Image (cartoon, rainbow, N blue to C red):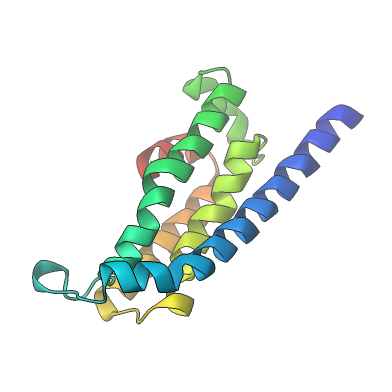
Length: 150
């Protein structure tokens, strides 16, 4: 029983470390990305994020989040159905799950710190955060939500 408890705490600690590393990386790279990719937002994306922010978020969307999903799937032995049954009891057990629960909202919330959040982007982020809260708190469909985000 003690081993399971230490694994759970390790997952939470790793999730917190990933969020801290992510925030530090984004804040550290912002000026370089802004210089290289520019502020320009035009056409269809006029209410979205600046170009530099899109470029800065890409590694998270195509690297970090899928990697966390992979960790969670492996932790649940590639059985998404069983994973769903386990999370319906309200426990997110794997490091991948716990890290995703923390990293995804940090990814969205950080925009208010690093760039001018336009109305459409703000609405998008609010809806995403509300959906994230529902998926985490209700937990029964969490694996399918996680799959959908990635």
